Image 1 (tube, protein in one colour):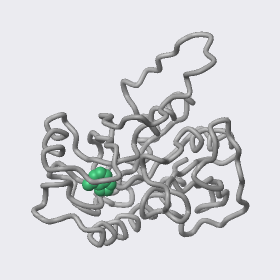
Image 2 (spheres, protein in one colour):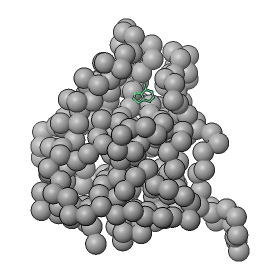
Image 3 (cartoon, protein in one colour):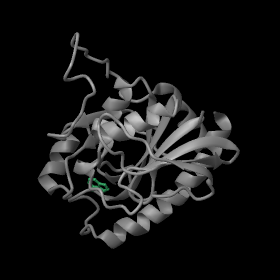
Image 4 (cartoon, protein in one colour):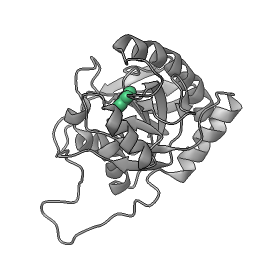
Length: 246
Ligand code: HPA
Protein backbone atom coordinates (compact mmCIF):
# COMPACT_ATOMS: atom_id res chain seq x y z
CA UNK A 1 0.00 0.00 0.00
CA UNK A 2 1.45 3.44 -0.93
CA UNK A 3 2.62 5.69 1.92
CA UNK A 4 1.40 8.82 0.18
CA UNK A 5 -0.78 9.88 -2.73
CA UNK A 6 0.08 13.00 -4.67
CA UNK A 7 -2.25 14.90 -6.97
CA UNK A 8 -0.23 17.08 -9.32
CA UNK A 9 -1.77 20.24 -10.71
CA UNK A 10 -0.75 22.67 -13.43
CA UNK A 11 3.03 22.44 -13.84
CA UNK A 12 3.22 18.99 -12.28
CA UNK A 13 1.85 16.40 -14.69
CA UNK A 14 4.67 13.97 -13.88
CA UNK A 15 6.88 13.45 -10.88
CA UNK A 16 10.57 13.68 -11.71
CA UNK A 17 12.54 11.04 -9.88
CA UNK A 18 9.57 8.69 -9.51
CA UNK A 19 10.69 5.11 -10.25
CA UNK A 20 7.47 3.88 -11.83
CA UNK A 21 6.46 0.35 -10.90
CA UNK A 22 3.02 0.13 -12.54
CA UNK A 23 0.14 2.11 -13.92
CA UNK A 24 -3.37 1.32 -12.81
CA UNK A 25 -6.69 1.89 -14.54
CA UNK A 26 -9.42 2.42 -11.95
CA UNK A 27 -13.13 2.40 -12.75
CA UNK A 28 -15.18 4.23 -10.17
CA UNK A 29 -18.91 4.54 -9.47
CA UNK A 30 -18.44 8.23 -10.34
CA UNK A 31 -16.91 7.74 -13.78
CA UNK A 32 -13.37 8.13 -15.02
CA UNK A 33 -10.56 9.70 -13.01
CA UNK A 34 -8.31 12.22 -14.79
CA UNK A 35 -6.00 9.39 -15.88
CA UNK A 36 -4.21 6.24 -14.83
CA UNK A 37 -2.82 6.06 -11.34
CA UNK A 38 0.97 5.96 -11.49
CA UNK A 39 2.47 3.80 -8.76
CA UNK A 40 6.16 4.03 -7.97
CA UNK A 41 8.95 4.69 -5.53
CA UNK A 42 9.97 8.24 -4.72
CA UNK A 43 13.11 8.72 -2.61
CA UNK A 44 12.61 5.23 -1.19
CA UNK A 45 8.90 5.53 -0.38
CA UNK A 46 5.94 4.00 -2.18
CA UNK A 47 3.73 6.69 -3.66
CA UNK A 48 0.84 6.90 -6.07
CA UNK A 49 0.52 9.88 -8.39
CA UNK A 50 -2.36 11.32 -10.39
CA UNK A 51 -2.27 14.34 -12.71
CA UNK A 52 -5.38 16.37 -11.84
CA UNK A 53 -5.78 17.85 -15.30
CA UNK A 54 -4.82 14.64 -17.13
CA UNK A 55 -1.33 13.69 -18.29
CA UNK A 56 -1.69 15.93 -21.36
CA UNK A 57 -3.08 18.80 -19.22
CA UNK A 58 -6.38 18.85 -21.13
CA UNK A 59 -9.04 18.83 -18.38
CA UNK A 60 -9.98 22.34 -17.17
CA UNK A 61 -10.56 22.92 -13.43
CA UNK A 62 -14.38 22.96 -13.64
CA UNK A 63 -14.43 19.67 -15.57
CA UNK A 64 -12.09 17.67 -13.37
CA UNK A 65 -13.95 14.61 -12.06
CA UNK A 66 -12.94 15.26 -8.45
CA UNK A 67 -15.14 12.48 -7.07
CA UNK A 68 -13.63 9.85 -9.39
CA UNK A 69 -10.09 11.06 -8.62
CA UNK A 70 -10.56 10.91 -4.86
CA UNK A 71 -12.44 7.62 -4.96
CA UNK A 72 -9.72 6.03 -7.15
CA UNK A 73 -6.92 7.17 -4.84
CA UNK A 74 -8.79 6.05 -1.72
CA UNK A 75 -9.18 2.62 -3.31
CA UNK A 76 -5.36 2.16 -3.30
CA UNK A 77 -5.54 2.10 0.50
CA UNK A 78 -3.70 5.40 1.09
CA UNK A 79 -4.52 7.51 4.09
CA UNK A 80 -2.50 10.64 3.24
CA UNK A 81 -3.05 12.77 0.18
CA UNK A 82 -0.95 15.73 -0.83
CA UNK A 83 -2.45 18.10 -3.38
CA UNK A 84 -0.10 20.34 -5.33
CA UNK A 85 -1.91 23.32 -6.78
CA UNK A 86 -1.00 26.49 -8.67
CA UNK A 87 -2.44 29.68 -7.20
CA UNK A 88 -2.45 33.41 -7.73
CA UNK A 89 -0.96 35.42 -4.86
CA UNK A 90 -3.30 38.02 -3.32
CA UNK A 91 -1.65 39.23 -0.15
CA UNK A 92 1.84 40.70 0.10
CA UNK A 93 3.73 37.63 1.24
CA UNK A 94 2.53 35.43 -1.57
CA UNK A 95 4.88 36.47 -4.30
CA UNK A 96 5.31 34.40 -7.48
CA UNK A 97 7.27 31.12 -7.20
CA UNK A 98 6.77 30.98 -3.43
CA UNK A 99 5.26 27.87 -1.80
CA UNK A 100 2.41 28.08 0.71
CA UNK A 101 0.72 25.54 2.97
CA UNK A 102 -2.80 26.99 3.35
CA UNK A 103 -4.83 26.38 6.49
CA UNK A 104 -8.28 27.65 5.47
CA UNK A 105 -10.57 27.72 2.45
CA UNK A 106 -13.36 29.92 1.11
CA UNK A 107 -15.32 28.16 -1.63
CA UNK A 108 -16.66 30.27 -4.52
CA UNK A 109 -17.13 27.38 -6.96
CA UNK A 110 -20.54 26.33 -8.25
CA UNK A 111 -22.27 23.42 -9.98
CA UNK A 112 -19.40 20.98 -9.44
CA UNK A 113 -20.21 17.48 -8.16
CA UNK A 114 -19.03 18.21 -4.65
CA UNK A 115 -20.22 15.39 -2.38
CA UNK A 116 -20.37 11.62 -2.07
CA UNK A 117 -23.28 11.97 0.34
CA UNK A 118 -26.24 12.19 -2.02
CA UNK A 119 -28.53 9.80 -3.85
CA UNK A 120 -29.44 6.56 -2.07
CA UNK A 121 -29.06 7.79 1.50
CA UNK A 122 -30.26 6.20 4.69
CA UNK A 123 -29.45 9.39 6.59
CA UNK A 124 -28.10 12.88 5.90
CA UNK A 125 -24.44 13.45 6.81
CA UNK A 126 -22.77 16.78 7.58
CA UNK A 127 -19.00 16.42 7.83
CA UNK A 128 -17.00 18.67 10.14
CA UNK A 129 -14.91 21.01 8.00
CA UNK A 130 -13.89 23.56 10.63
CA UNK A 131 -10.26 22.82 9.80
CA UNK A 132 -10.39 21.86 6.11
CA UNK A 133 -6.84 20.50 5.91
CA UNK A 134 -5.25 17.64 7.85
CA UNK A 135 -3.19 19.13 10.67
CA UNK A 136 -0.80 16.20 10.75
CA UNK A 137 0.14 16.41 7.05
CA UNK A 138 0.35 20.21 7.21
CA UNK A 139 2.78 19.93 10.12
CA UNK A 140 4.94 17.47 8.15
CA UNK A 141 4.93 19.81 5.14
CA UNK A 142 5.94 22.77 7.28
CA UNK A 143 8.68 20.72 8.95
CA UNK A 144 9.96 19.50 5.56
CA UNK A 145 9.92 23.03 4.10
CA UNK A 146 11.87 24.40 7.08
CA UNK A 147 14.41 21.60 6.87
CA UNK A 148 14.89 22.31 3.16
CA UNK A 149 15.03 26.10 3.79
CA UNK A 150 12.34 26.73 1.20
CA UNK A 151 10.84 29.82 2.83
CA UNK A 152 7.30 28.48 2.42
CA UNK A 153 4.40 30.53 3.75
CA UNK A 154 3.10 28.46 6.67
CA UNK A 155 -0.58 29.31 6.45
CA UNK A 156 -3.13 31.33 4.55
CA UNK A 157 -6.63 31.14 3.22
CA UNK A 158 -7.22 29.60 -0.19
CA UNK A 159 -10.09 31.10 -2.19
CA UNK A 160 -11.42 28.53 -4.68
CA UNK A 161 -12.87 30.11 -7.82
CA UNK A 162 -14.74 28.50 -10.67
CA UNK A 163 -12.46 29.31 -13.60
CA UNK A 164 -11.29 28.62 -16.16
CA UNK A 165 -10.98 32.35 -16.68
CA UNK A 166 -8.86 34.34 -14.26
CA UNK A 167 -10.57 36.84 -11.96
CA UNK A 168 -11.32 40.55 -12.29
CA UNK A 169 -9.59 43.06 -10.02
CA UNK A 170 -12.89 43.62 -8.19
CA UNK A 171 -13.27 39.90 -7.61
CA UNK A 172 -9.78 39.69 -6.15
CA UNK A 173 -10.51 42.77 -3.98
CA UNK A 174 -13.59 40.95 -2.69
CA UNK A 175 -11.61 37.77 -2.02
CA UNK A 176 -9.08 39.83 -0.06
CA UNK A 177 -11.86 41.44 1.99
CA UNK A 178 -13.12 37.92 2.66
CA UNK A 179 -9.70 37.05 4.08
CA UNK A 180 -8.27 35.09 1.15
CA UNK A 181 -4.49 35.16 0.69
CA UNK A 182 -4.35 33.09 -2.48
CA UNK A 183 -6.72 32.10 -5.27
CA UNK A 184 -6.91 28.88 -7.23
CA UNK A 185 -9.47 26.90 -9.18
CA UNK A 186 -9.12 23.33 -7.89
CA UNK A 187 -8.99 23.46 -4.09
CA UNK A 188 -12.71 22.74 -3.89
CA UNK A 189 -14.47 20.39 -4.01
CA UNK A 190 -11.26 18.36 -3.73
CA UNK A 191 -10.62 19.14 -0.05
CA UNK A 192 -14.24 18.55 0.97
CA UNK A 193 -14.41 15.22 -0.85
CA UNK A 194 -11.14 14.12 0.78
CA UNK A 195 -12.66 14.85 4.19
CA UNK A 196 -15.80 12.90 3.28
CA UNK A 197 -13.54 9.92 2.52
CA UNK A 198 -11.67 10.51 5.80
CA UNK A 199 -8.37 11.06 4.02
CA UNK A 200 -5.63 13.14 5.60
CA UNK A 201 -5.43 15.84 2.91
CA UNK A 202 -3.23 18.93 2.69
CA UNK A 203 -2.23 21.31 -0.08
CA UNK A 204 1.10 22.65 -1.17
CA UNK A 205 0.22 25.76 -3.16
CA UNK A 206 2.69 27.15 -5.68
CA UNK A 207 2.25 30.82 -6.49
CA UNK A 208 2.22 31.12 -10.28
CA UNK A 209 1.43 34.84 -10.58
CA UNK A 210 0.17 37.86 -8.73
CA UNK A 211 -3.63 37.66 -8.75
CA UNK A 212 -5.56 40.11 -10.96
CA UNK A 213 -4.87 43.75 -10.13
CA UNK A 214 -1.93 42.86 -7.86
CA UNK A 215 1.72 43.26 -8.78
CA UNK A 216 1.04 45.91 -11.44
CA UNK A 217 1.48 43.61 -14.43
CA UNK A 218 -0.83 41.84 -16.86
CA UNK A 219 -0.99 38.11 -16.22
CA UNK A 220 0.43 36.14 -19.11
CA UNK A 221 0.67 32.38 -19.61
CA UNK A 222 4.39 32.84 -20.09
CA UNK A 223 4.76 34.50 -16.67
CA UNK A 224 2.73 31.71 -15.11
CA UNK A 225 4.89 29.04 -16.73
CA UNK A 226 8.16 30.67 -15.67
CA UNK A 227 7.11 30.97 -12.03
CA UNK A 228 5.63 27.49 -12.00
CA UNK A 229 8.90 26.03 -13.26
CA UNK A 230 10.73 27.70 -10.36
CA UNK A 231 8.01 26.73 -7.89
CA UNK A 232 7.84 23.10 -8.99
CA UNK A 233 11.61 22.75 -8.55
CA UNK A 234 10.95 23.72 -4.91
CA UNK A 235 8.09 21.21 -4.69
CA UNK A 236 10.47 18.43 -5.70
CA UNK A 237 12.90 19.41 -2.92
CA UNK A 238 9.97 19.59 -0.51
CA UNK A 239 8.84 16.09 -1.50
CA UNK A 240 12.30 14.69 -0.95
CA UNK A 241 12.25 15.96 2.63
CA UNK A 242 8.59 15.12 3.19
CA UNK A 243 8.79 11.44 2.26
CA UNK A 244 11.65 10.95 4.72
CA UNK A 245 9.38 12.20 7.49
CA UNK A 246 6.53 9.81 6.72
N1 HPA B 1 -6.45 32.78 -10.21
C1 HPA B 1 -7.03 31.57 -10.09
N2 HPA B 1 -6.34 30.43 -10.21
C2 HPA B 1 -5.04 30.52 -10.46
C3 HPA B 1 -4.38 31.74 -10.61
C4 HPA B 1 -5.13 32.94 -10.48
O1 HPA B 1 -4.61 34.07 -10.60
N3 HPA B 1 -3.07 31.48 -10.88
C5 HPA B 1 -2.95 30.12 -10.87
N4 HPA B 1 -4.14 29.54 -10.63
